[in-house]
Image (tube, rainbow, N blue to C red):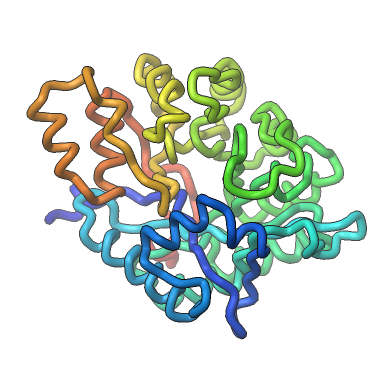
Length: 330
């Protein structure tokens, strides 16, 4: 396999870590009982009663699939910050899932040939600016946020120092967009991509997750916003994570007919979620469909389904200066 073939970076891979005595992570009792979390435990054959073994098994499965990929050679592991109160202190009572940044960095340091660090920083935390600089110094390549569940408004101008810090450190901001299904939904309106204009106006490179898909099957209310943001801001991008899922199919089909937007799209999967070949049914010949069905590797299937439908995309290293600067691992 040539390096030219295996060149993509997946910018949207979740590090799932059950809390143990050392990793600083947290998961609420409600989240442990949720159908999605139970499904993921079943799919990876892991038990929440043995967190260290479960975390090792999840990581081994991820590494095995990434190594076996024909197209993807690295993945950005994403952390998940919590909810913070008005004083900027962690509010554990409203936090359902927390994957600590230090846990992300330890994992990346242990497997530098395969992983890159995507820590999560809620800008409402009182040390948000300091955490940006700390994470940048530790080798982060982007910062991930999920406003709906982390309870902050990206448009709030109080977070301008946070955005200035991202700019100073050349760190893109990867933000969830649209409806949030998996975690607590403190305010679904915070998933509106129009709220990312404050960061964009400050010059931050912003990556909207899921290509701005609203996530409610046939209702893609943010497609006009996606077009407007692409036309207005050269520093705006969107990843294609989760677009093969049935509830985001409409956005995938809309985008395949808009090649003028494809240079703003970045490769991502939303691992460990499943990747479906359903979008190609009735749109490709039977031989091609059979090949996609036989492709079990989620990284490869995501790329092949989208490319087969005529959707092109870029790799994170094409737009992230920290990945192309001297001394940074490629």
